[in-house]
Length: 417
Image (cartoon, rainbow, N blue to C red; front, side):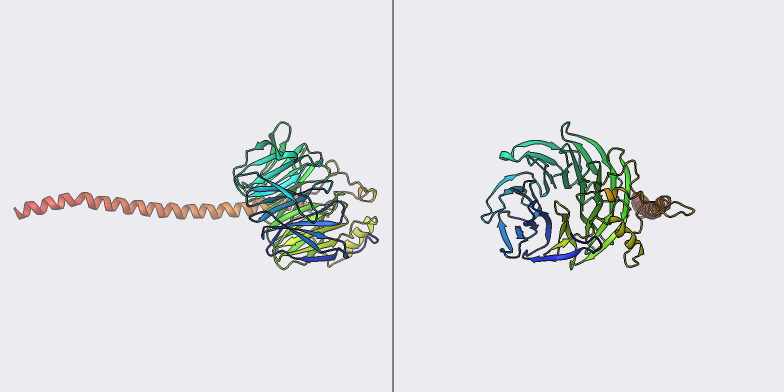
Protein backbone atom coordinates (compact mmCIF):
# COMPACT_ATOMS: atom_id res chain seq x y z
CA UNK A 1 0.00 0.00 0.00
CA UNK A 2 1.33 3.38 -0.95
CA UNK A 3 -0.84 5.75 1.03
CA UNK A 4 -2.06 5.50 4.59
CA UNK A 5 -4.68 8.20 4.14
CA UNK A 6 -6.92 6.36 1.71
CA UNK A 7 -10.19 4.70 2.60
CA UNK A 8 -10.64 0.98 1.91
CA UNK A 9 -11.38 0.51 -1.79
CA UNK A 10 -13.29 -2.20 -3.64
CA UNK A 11 -10.73 -3.90 -5.90
CA UNK A 12 -12.55 -6.91 -7.34
CA UNK A 13 -16.13 -8.10 -7.52
CA UNK A 14 -17.05 -11.72 -8.21
CA UNK A 15 -20.40 -13.32 -8.93
CA UNK A 16 -20.87 -17.01 -9.67
CA UNK A 17 -22.62 -18.58 -6.70
CA UNK A 18 -26.32 -19.34 -7.02
CA UNK A 19 -27.16 -18.75 -3.37
CA UNK A 20 -25.86 -16.90 -0.30
CA UNK A 21 -22.09 -16.88 0.28
CA UNK A 22 -21.45 -18.28 3.77
CA UNK A 23 -17.66 -18.31 4.13
CA UNK A 24 -14.55 -16.76 2.58
CA UNK A 25 -10.77 -17.20 2.99
CA UNK A 26 -7.54 -16.10 1.28
CA UNK A 27 -4.79 -18.44 0.19
CA UNK A 28 -1.45 -17.36 1.66
CA UNK A 29 -0.02 -16.95 -1.85
CA UNK A 30 -2.56 -14.15 -2.49
CA UNK A 31 -3.46 -15.76 -5.82
CA UNK A 32 -6.73 -17.39 -4.73
CA UNK A 33 -9.83 -16.80 -2.64
CA UNK A 34 -12.11 -19.66 -1.61
CA UNK A 35 -15.81 -19.23 -0.88
CA UNK A 36 -18.53 -21.58 0.31
CA UNK A 37 -22.21 -21.15 -0.40
CA UNK A 38 -25.70 -22.37 0.36
CA UNK A 39 -25.71 -23.61 -3.26
CA UNK A 40 -23.57 -26.60 -2.07
CA UNK A 41 -20.56 -25.47 -4.12
CA UNK A 42 -17.11 -24.13 -3.37
CA UNK A 43 -15.60 -21.52 -5.68
CA UNK A 44 -11.89 -20.80 -6.04
CA UNK A 45 -11.51 -17.26 -7.36
CA UNK A 46 -8.29 -16.23 -9.11
CA UNK A 47 -7.02 -12.78 -8.21
CA UNK A 48 -4.79 -12.43 -11.28
CA UNK A 49 -6.82 -10.64 -14.00
CA UNK A 50 -5.22 -12.50 -16.92
CA UNK A 51 -6.23 -15.91 -15.58
CA UNK A 52 -9.57 -17.71 -15.52
CA UNK A 53 -11.82 -16.05 -12.93
CA UNK A 54 -12.87 -19.14 -10.99
CA UNK A 55 -13.10 -22.90 -10.57
CA UNK A 56 -16.24 -24.53 -9.20
CA UNK A 57 -15.75 -27.46 -6.83
CA UNK A 58 -18.70 -29.83 -6.49
CA UNK A 59 -18.83 -32.63 -3.92
CA UNK A 60 -21.02 -31.67 -1.01
CA UNK A 61 -24.67 -32.70 -1.17
CA UNK A 62 -25.95 -29.73 0.84
CA UNK A 63 -25.00 -26.17 1.81
CA UNK A 64 -21.32 -25.41 2.45
CA UNK A 65 -21.08 -23.60 5.79
CA UNK A 66 -17.32 -23.01 6.19
CA UNK A 67 -14.11 -23.04 4.14
CA UNK A 68 -10.45 -22.43 5.03
CA UNK A 69 -7.04 -22.77 3.41
CA UNK A 70 -4.25 -24.45 5.34
CA UNK A 71 -1.34 -22.21 6.38
CA UNK A 72 0.75 -23.58 3.51
CA UNK A 73 -2.06 -23.02 1.01
CA UNK A 74 -1.74 -26.55 -0.34
CA UNK A 75 -5.05 -27.76 1.10
CA UNK A 76 -8.57 -26.39 1.45
CA UNK A 77 -11.07 -27.72 3.98
CA UNK A 78 -14.85 -27.34 3.88
CA UNK A 79 -17.74 -28.14 6.22
CA UNK A 80 -21.29 -28.79 5.13
CA UNK A 81 -24.88 -29.25 6.14
CA UNK A 82 -24.54 -32.77 4.70
CA UNK A 83 -22.66 -33.58 7.97
CA UNK A 84 -19.33 -34.13 6.21
CA UNK A 85 -15.95 -32.42 6.02
CA UNK A 86 -13.98 -32.40 2.76
CA UNK A 87 -10.30 -31.79 2.12
CA UNK A 88 -9.53 -30.40 -1.34
CA UNK A 89 -6.43 -29.78 -3.41
CA UNK A 90 -7.05 -26.22 -4.68
CA UNK A 91 -6.08 -26.95 -8.28
CA UNK A 92 -8.04 -27.04 -11.52
CA UNK A 93 -8.97 -30.71 -10.97
CA UNK A 94 -10.36 -30.04 -7.50
CA UNK A 95 -9.66 -33.50 -6.10
CA UNK A 96 -11.09 -34.13 -2.63
CA UNK A 97 -11.57 -36.67 0.12
CA UNK A 98 -14.51 -36.61 2.52
CA UNK A 99 -15.35 -38.00 5.93
CA UNK A 100 -18.52 -37.95 8.02
CA UNK A 101 -17.69 -35.72 10.96
CA UNK A 102 -20.93 -35.23 12.91
CA UNK A 103 -24.54 -36.32 13.23
CA UNK A 104 -25.75 -32.79 12.46
CA UNK A 105 -24.84 -29.85 10.25
CA UNK A 106 -21.12 -29.04 10.44
CA UNK A 107 -21.14 -25.26 10.95
CA UNK A 108 -17.41 -24.60 11.17
CA UNK A 109 -14.04 -26.10 10.36
CA UNK A 110 -10.61 -24.67 11.19
CA UNK A 111 -6.98 -25.71 10.62
CA UNK A 112 -4.44 -25.49 13.42
CA UNK A 113 -1.54 -23.16 12.62
CA UNK A 114 0.77 -26.11 11.90
CA UNK A 115 -1.77 -27.60 9.49
CA UNK A 116 -1.77 -30.97 11.26
CA UNK A 117 -5.18 -30.91 12.97
CA UNK A 118 -8.74 -29.74 12.36
CA UNK A 119 -11.45 -28.60 14.74
CA UNK A 120 -15.11 -28.87 13.74
CA UNK A 121 -18.31 -27.51 15.30
CA UNK A 122 -21.79 -28.88 14.73
CA UNK A 123 -25.51 -28.70 15.36
CA UNK A 124 -25.10 -31.98 17.28
CA UNK A 125 -23.78 -29.74 20.13
CA UNK A 126 -20.23 -31.11 19.93
CA UNK A 127 -16.78 -29.90 18.97
CA UNK A 128 -14.41 -32.49 17.50
CA UNK A 129 -10.69 -32.51 16.82
CA UNK A 130 -9.21 -34.55 13.95
CA UNK A 131 -5.87 -35.20 12.32
CA UNK A 132 -5.57 -33.94 8.76
CA UNK A 133 -3.67 -37.08 7.78
CA UNK A 134 -6.14 -39.96 7.39
CA UNK A 135 -8.89 -37.89 9.12
CA UNK A 136 -8.32 -39.66 12.43
CA UNK A 137 -10.73 -38.65 15.20
CA UNK A 138 -8.84 -37.50 18.31
CA UNK A 139 -11.41 -36.29 20.84
CA UNK A 140 -14.70 -34.52 21.38
CA UNK A 141 -15.69 -31.54 23.57
CA UNK A 142 -19.24 -31.87 24.85
CA UNK A 143 -20.29 -29.17 27.32
CA UNK A 144 -22.42 -27.03 25.00
CA UNK A 145 -26.18 -27.61 25.29
CA UNK A 146 -27.21 -26.19 21.91
CA UNK A 147 -25.87 -25.83 18.37
CA UNK A 148 -22.19 -24.90 18.16
CA UNK A 149 -21.81 -22.24 15.48
CA UNK A 150 -18.06 -21.80 15.43
CA UNK A 151 -14.80 -23.28 16.77
CA UNK A 152 -11.29 -21.91 16.23
CA UNK A 153 -7.77 -22.79 17.32
CA UNK A 154 -5.63 -20.21 19.08
CA UNK A 155 -2.55 -19.03 17.13
CA UNK A 156 -0.32 -21.45 19.08
CA UNK A 157 -2.82 -24.30 18.70
CA UNK A 158 -3.08 -24.94 22.45
CA UNK A 159 -6.56 -23.47 23.00
CA UNK A 160 -9.90 -23.64 21.23
CA UNK A 161 -12.66 -21.03 21.32
CA UNK A 162 -16.26 -22.02 20.58
CA UNK A 163 -19.48 -20.04 20.09
CA UNK A 164 -22.89 -21.57 20.62
CA UNK A 165 -26.63 -21.02 20.51
CA UNK A 166 -26.60 -21.79 24.25
CA UNK A 167 -25.50 -18.12 24.68
CA UNK A 168 -21.96 -18.97 25.74
CA UNK A 169 -18.44 -18.61 24.40
CA UNK A 170 -16.13 -21.28 25.80
CA UNK A 171 -12.35 -21.55 25.98
CA UNK A 172 -10.97 -25.09 25.91
CA UNK A 173 -7.52 -26.47 26.68
CA UNK A 174 -6.56 -28.80 23.84
CA UNK A 175 -4.22 -30.91 25.97
CA UNK A 176 -6.42 -31.41 29.04
CA UNK A 177 -9.62 -31.36 26.92
CA UNK A 178 -11.28 -29.28 29.62
CA UNK A 179 -13.32 -26.08 29.40
CA UNK A 180 -11.18 -23.54 31.24
CA UNK A 181 -13.68 -20.68 31.06
CA UNK A 182 -17.18 -19.94 29.81
CA UNK A 183 -18.24 -16.39 28.90
CA UNK A 184 -22.00 -15.90 29.16
CA UNK A 185 -22.33 -12.12 28.85
CA UNK A 186 -23.98 -12.29 25.42
CA UNK A 187 -27.71 -11.66 25.56
CA UNK A 188 -28.51 -14.39 23.06
CA UNK A 189 -26.98 -16.91 20.68
CA UNK A 190 -23.37 -16.35 19.61
CA UNK A 191 -22.72 -16.56 15.87
CA UNK A 192 -18.98 -16.24 15.70
CA UNK A 193 -15.81 -16.08 17.80
CA UNK A 194 -12.10 -15.89 17.07
CA UNK A 195 -8.73 -15.29 18.71
CA UNK A 196 -6.75 -12.07 18.53
CA UNK A 197 -3.42 -12.67 16.71
CA UNK A 198 -1.62 -12.38 20.06
CA UNK A 199 -3.69 -15.27 21.44
CA UNK A 200 -4.48 -13.30 24.61
CA UNK A 201 -7.93 -12.02 23.63
CA UNK A 202 -11.03 -13.22 21.84
CA UNK A 203 -13.83 -11.42 20.04
CA UNK A 204 -17.38 -12.71 19.71
CA UNK A 205 -20.47 -11.55 17.84
CA UNK A 206 -24.12 -12.51 17.70
CA UNK A 207 -27.68 -11.74 16.64
CA UNK A 208 -27.98 -9.19 19.48
CA UNK A 209 -26.01 -6.79 17.20
CA UNK A 210 -23.09 -6.65 19.66
CA UNK A 211 -19.38 -7.33 19.36
CA UNK A 212 -17.43 -8.06 22.54
CA UNK A 213 -13.71 -8.45 23.19
CA UNK A 214 -12.45 -10.34 26.25
CA UNK A 215 -9.02 -10.88 27.76
CA UNK A 216 -8.80 -14.63 28.29
CA UNK A 217 -6.09 -14.27 30.97
CA UNK A 218 -8.17 -12.09 33.28
CA UNK A 219 -11.56 -13.19 31.80
CA UNK A 220 -12.52 -9.49 31.79
CA UNK A 221 -14.59 -7.73 29.14
CA UNK A 222 -12.26 -5.25 27.42
CA UNK A 223 -14.41 -3.74 24.69
CA UNK A 224 -18.08 -3.70 23.81
CA UNK A 225 -19.29 -2.33 20.48
CA UNK A 226 -22.95 -1.64 19.71
CA UNK A 227 -22.63 -0.45 16.14
CA UNK A 228 -24.78 -2.60 13.87
CA UNK A 229 -28.55 -2.47 13.51
CA UNK A 230 -28.89 -6.22 12.85
CA UNK A 231 -27.13 -9.49 13.66
CA UNK A 232 -23.34 -9.62 13.40
CA UNK A 233 -22.56 -12.76 11.41
CA UNK A 234 -18.76 -12.82 11.25
CA UNK A 235 -15.61 -10.96 12.23
CA UNK A 236 -11.90 -11.00 11.43
CA UNK A 237 -8.83 -9.56 13.16
CA UNK A 238 -6.22 -7.75 11.10
CA UNK A 239 -2.91 -9.67 11.39
CA UNK A 240 -1.27 -6.74 13.23
CA UNK A 241 -3.99 -6.96 15.88
CA UNK A 242 -4.96 -3.28 15.78
CA UNK A 243 -8.15 -3.64 13.75
CA UNK A 244 -11.27 -5.78 13.68
CA UNK A 245 -13.75 -6.00 10.82
CA UNK A 246 -17.34 -7.18 11.21
CA UNK A 247 -20.02 -8.36 8.76
CA UNK A 248 -23.68 -7.84 9.57
CA UNK A 249 -27.19 -8.59 8.39
CA UNK A 250 -27.67 -4.81 8.16
CA UNK A 251 -25.66 -5.22 4.88
CA UNK A 252 -22.61 -3.31 6.15
CA UNK A 253 -19.02 -4.07 7.06
CA UNK A 254 -17.50 -2.06 9.90
CA UNK A 255 -13.80 -1.55 10.58
CA UNK A 256 -12.97 -1.00 14.26
CA UNK A 257 -9.80 0.54 15.66
CA UNK A 258 -9.00 -1.56 18.73
CA UNK A 259 -6.23 0.76 19.93
CA UNK A 260 -8.48 3.81 20.03
CA UNK A 261 -11.60 1.78 20.80
CA UNK A 262 -13.75 3.30 18.06
CA UNK A 263 -15.26 2.89 14.63
CA UNK A 264 -13.06 3.78 11.65
CA UNK A 265 -15.20 2.92 8.62
CA UNK A 266 -18.64 1.71 7.63
CA UNK A 267 -18.56 0.03 4.22
CA UNK A 268 -21.62 -0.42 2.02
CA UNK A 269 -21.61 -2.75 -0.94
CA UNK A 270 -23.75 -5.82 -0.34
CA UNK A 271 -27.41 -5.72 -1.30
CA UNK A 272 -28.57 -7.72 1.68
CA UNK A 273 -26.99 -9.39 4.72
CA UNK A 274 -23.19 -9.59 4.75
CA UNK A 275 -22.57 -13.18 5.84
CA UNK A 276 -18.77 -13.50 6.04
CA UNK A 277 -15.55 -11.49 6.05
CA UNK A 278 -11.82 -12.26 6.30
CA UNK A 279 -8.51 -10.40 6.12
CA UNK A 280 -5.73 -11.74 3.91
CA UNK A 281 -2.70 -13.25 5.65
CA UNK A 282 -0.68 -10.04 5.22
CA UNK A 283 -3.61 -7.74 5.98
CA UNK A 284 -3.37 -5.80 2.72
CA UNK A 285 -6.80 -7.00 1.58
CA UNK A 286 -10.05 -8.31 2.99
CA UNK A 287 -12.93 -10.13 1.33
CA UNK A 288 -16.63 -10.33 2.10
CA UNK A 289 -19.55 -12.45 0.97
CA UNK A 290 -23.28 -11.98 1.31
CA UNK A 291 -26.79 -13.21 0.76
CA UNK A 292 -26.70 -11.30 -2.55
CA UNK A 293 -24.46 -14.12 -3.88
CA UNK A 294 -21.59 -11.66 -4.36
CA UNK A 295 -17.95 -11.82 -3.29
CA UNK A 296 -16.14 -8.51 -2.83
CA UNK A 297 -12.39 -8.01 -2.45
CA UNK A 298 -11.29 -4.78 -0.78
CA UNK A 299 -7.88 -3.16 -0.47
CA UNK A 300 -7.26 -2.27 3.16
CA UNK A 301 -5.35 1.03 2.70
CA UNK A 302 -5.91 2.25 6.27
CA UNK A 303 -3.09 0.13 7.71
CA UNK A 304 -0.22 2.26 6.44
CA UNK A 305 2.86 3.48 8.29
CA UNK A 306 1.50 6.94 9.01
CA UNK A 307 -0.97 5.74 11.63
CA UNK A 308 -0.83 8.94 13.70
CA UNK A 309 -1.86 11.01 10.70
CA UNK A 310 -4.78 8.70 10.00
CA UNK A 311 -6.06 9.14 13.55
CA UNK A 312 -5.60 12.91 13.41
CA UNK A 313 -7.60 13.18 10.19
CA UNK A 314 -10.24 10.73 11.38
CA UNK A 315 -10.94 12.90 14.42
CA UNK A 316 -11.54 15.88 12.13
CA UNK A 317 -13.79 14.00 9.71
CA UNK A 318 -17.42 14.58 10.59
CA UNK A 319 -18.47 11.98 8.04
CA UNK A 320 -17.05 9.12 10.09
CA UNK A 321 -19.67 7.88 12.54
CA UNK A 322 -18.65 7.66 16.19
CA UNK A 323 -19.56 4.25 17.68
CA UNK A 324 -22.49 4.35 20.05
CA UNK A 325 -22.07 2.25 23.13
CA UNK A 326 -18.37 1.44 22.75
CA UNK A 327 -16.80 1.10 26.16
CA UNK A 328 -14.41 -0.90 28.33
CA UNK A 329 -11.53 -0.25 25.96
CA UNK A 330 -8.18 -2.03 26.06
CA UNK A 331 -6.18 -0.86 29.08
CA UNK A 332 -2.42 -0.72 28.72
CA UNK A 333 -1.77 -3.63 31.07
CA UNK A 334 -3.92 -6.07 29.09
CA UNK A 335 -3.87 -4.58 25.59
CA UNK A 336 -2.31 -6.97 23.04
CA UNK A 337 0.93 -5.22 22.03
CA UNK A 338 0.61 -4.01 18.42
CA UNK A 339 3.66 -5.06 16.41
CA UNK A 340 4.04 -1.77 14.55
CA UNK A 341 6.03 0.96 16.35
CA UNK A 342 3.70 3.75 15.24
CA UNK A 343 0.68 1.91 16.60
CA UNK A 344 2.46 1.18 19.87
CA UNK A 345 2.90 4.87 20.51
CA UNK A 346 -0.85 5.36 20.66
CA UNK A 347 -2.20 5.70 24.20
CA UNK A 348 -5.20 3.57 25.13
CA UNK A 349 -8.50 5.23 24.36
CA UNK A 350 -9.90 7.32 27.19
CA UNK A 351 -13.32 8.90 27.26
CA UNK A 352 -13.60 12.72 27.45
CA UNK A 353 -13.80 14.04 30.99
CA UNK A 354 -17.34 14.36 32.23
CA UNK A 355 -19.31 13.93 35.41
CA UNK A 356 -19.91 10.24 34.73
CA UNK A 357 -17.38 7.91 33.06
CA UNK A 358 -18.52 6.50 29.70
CA UNK A 359 -18.14 2.91 30.90
CA UNK A 360 -20.31 3.61 33.95
CA UNK A 361 -22.92 5.36 31.80
CA UNK A 362 -23.19 2.39 29.47
CA UNK A 363 -23.28 -0.02 32.39
CA UNK A 364 -26.13 1.94 33.98
CA UNK A 365 -27.97 2.03 30.65
CA UNK A 366 -27.57 -1.73 30.42
CA UNK A 367 -28.90 -2.17 33.97
CA UNK A 368 -31.89 0.07 33.22
CA UNK A 369 -32.60 -1.98 30.11
CA UNK A 370 -32.46 -5.19 32.13
CA UNK A 371 -34.82 -3.69 34.74
CA UNK A 372 -37.27 -2.80 31.97
CA UNK A 373 -37.16 -6.40 30.78
CA UNK A 374 -37.73 -7.64 34.35
CA UNK A 375 -40.68 -5.26 34.74
CA UNK A 376 -42.23 -6.54 31.53
CA UNK A 377 -41.61 -10.12 32.61
CA UNK A 378 -43.29 -9.55 36.00
CA UNK A 379 -46.27 -7.94 34.26
CA UNK A 380 -46.61 -10.96 31.98
CA UNK A 381 -46.37 -13.31 34.97
CA UNK A 382 -49.09 -11.33 36.78
CA UNK A 383 -51.34 -11.63 33.74
CA UNK A 384 -50.71 -15.36 33.58
CA UNK A 385 -51.37 -15.71 37.32
CA UNK A 386 -54.65 -13.82 37.00
CA UNK A 387 -55.66 -16.03 34.08
CA UNK A 388 -54.76 -19.14 36.09
CA UNK A 389 -56.80 -17.92 39.07
CA UNK A 390 -59.79 -17.27 36.82
CA UNK A 391 -59.53 -20.74 35.32
CA UNK A 392 -59.18 -22.30 38.77
CA UNK A 393 -62.26 -20.43 40.01
CA UNK A 394 -64.18 -21.60 36.97
CA UNK A 395 -63.11 -25.21 37.63
CA UNK A 396 -64.20 -24.96 41.31
CA UNK A 397 -67.58 -23.51 40.31
CA UNK A 398 -68.10 -26.30 37.79
CA UNK A 399 -67.13 -28.87 40.41
CA UNK A 400 -69.69 -27.44 42.84
CA UNK A 401 -72.36 -27.63 40.17
CA UNK A 402 -71.49 -31.25 39.46
CA UNK A 403 -71.59 -32.14 43.17
CA UNK A 404 -74.99 -30.50 43.52
CA UNK A 405 -76.49 -32.56 40.70
CA UNK A 406 -77.06 -35.80 42.79
CA UNK A 407 -78.74 -33.79 45.57
CA UNK A 408 -81.00 -32.12 43.04
CA UNK A 409 -81.83 -35.47 41.47
CA UNK A 410 -82.62 -36.97 44.90
CA UNK A 411 -84.83 -34.03 45.78
CA UNK A 412 -86.74 -34.35 42.53
CA UNK A 413 -87.14 -38.08 43.13
CA UNK A 414 -88.50 -37.47 46.64
CA UNK A 415 -90.99 -34.90 45.37
CA UNK A 416 -92.21 -37.17 42.60
CA UNK A 417 -92.70 -40.09 44.99
